[in-house]
Length: 109
Length: 114
Image (cartoon, rainbow over all chains, first blue to last red; front, side):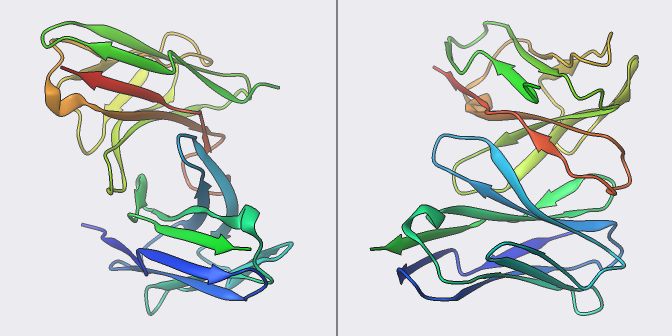
């Protein structure tokens, strides 16, 4: 069974810092990996989708990498802002999306 | 383009009551999904559908039923609600099932069973 782990569970950084969120998964036979953002009491917003054949994807200040052989992905956020405060979820697609428990990020002014 | 919509936003049920959570998408997606999210936990798949008339169980289907009579709608039925079904329910849709395209999520329904 695919297990997805996200470290750290919570993170607090001052505004302007660059930061890295980590995601690991146990089975490398995946179709893709997707990073989501979830604001309190809201649904999930897709940030980046990396296909299994790709190594990374970029969108604005976000960069996600995928190392399928080692079962790892990182989400890099450059020049963090208070508006980045949210929970970030990693999910890997096998038959269905398998989600980690998320990293709760707080960016303080 | 409304994306994925869910109703209601909130609901309180008494033990043993039944209800239907509504989900609709206007993106002409074939694949639709129902997840539940418990506090501090990742999302778990309840049921999914690969097209009108076709549904299948996910990881946690017990206590739920679904139907898919149209491409747009994918309602989730709770029969005989139990406190263990207190959760936030998310509906999602995608164009394909192989992961070439993203899954899009609705805003969620927060359900409390007392």
